[in-house]
Length: 296
Length: 230
Image (cartoon, rainbow over all chains, first blue to last red; front, side, top):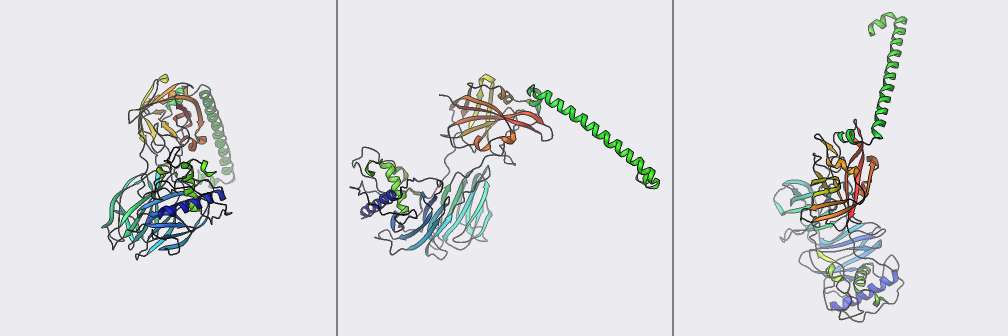
């Protein structure tokens, strides 16, 4: 059965490829003018099929799995999620939902539970803005059947009151943090603590998913790399002693001459100012004897 | 025609084309489908990325594309393991032999360096000699309170000289100097210098030019570029 489905999908795929002349491969980032789409299955216990524009795209997609990223032409894609034995997308358990994908965008579509435990889907935009040299980005997304949560790092709340289906984004110095998730306003973990590596120049996206009532809350992790930027310079001198001793001969006399000329010009200027000031004071003294004496 | 396409390529392309679908905004003209003749062994449609490359020449079902493969993995992404850090750099022609530490950025976003001019720093967020691509950047102060440091001699480097870098795995990487230049600090092409893609290369960096007493900084950076020796 699944073999038949696959064959039909393959056929449509080849036809679409031929028609559009599209040549694309999975990539970590969208190529110029395209969008990158990943899909996360965050509904516990239930394998599903994912249909895009009416075609089965992911067959028997397992909870906790991440598909993509795929390099797609910008546009709106209609996604439906069905039971794994569906013969078409006419009776979805989630959707259909329209995913508007913009050129250059990086997205993750997540099939998950809402706060009350009903299946739903959310399209998140993954930040690919450059990170400062030495920093990474941590994105935390609440896609679990659970009330508001706090995210604790090293026992301290770094994100507070995060609710389904929202996210919080932080830029942090690169490193590994011990993260846990607790009900908002509390410090008793419902997930973790777990080590989360925030790599330099990488957006590390952590999903809290599952169901609090069912006792299957868990973390899923996705990374989007290539956000790094370069250090702003290389300050590799401390005292000037290398310049004094080994600066090239053409530079040293040049600098010395410039320096001496500057000194001479400064002396002239200072002398001029003093001379002028003296004359002014003399003039003022002549004009108003009382005032000149007070100022002096 | 598609039957001539390498299987791996076709599998990947089909996987992508699937998501584009017949209702793509790119517009479908409803071109006739290329009929696949048969299918390869039944595997889950969503297979690991590696599977796409497995359908090379010489399979039991020639001229048949693999089923569509959208790459799927458990959502437990980890950054790739860091390459071994450089621990020693040598440039025998200049009598240079320095230990190397792994450093990141200072509080102003510049490359961080150890205080001693007798110790070099490797930019730990960039490429390393074992990396398949990108620039390994190693820098040392040209001077320190103890006086002029060994990297002051970099300005005397010449094209063709050999540079050695030993990493934490004990592997020695040999490079040949291809360029020596001095650049005003304001013009330092940092994006290019700290490039993490492109052909592997090594750049040794220090300061040069004149000392600006007010800025407490040299005017220039001295860059010695070297490429892996063949």
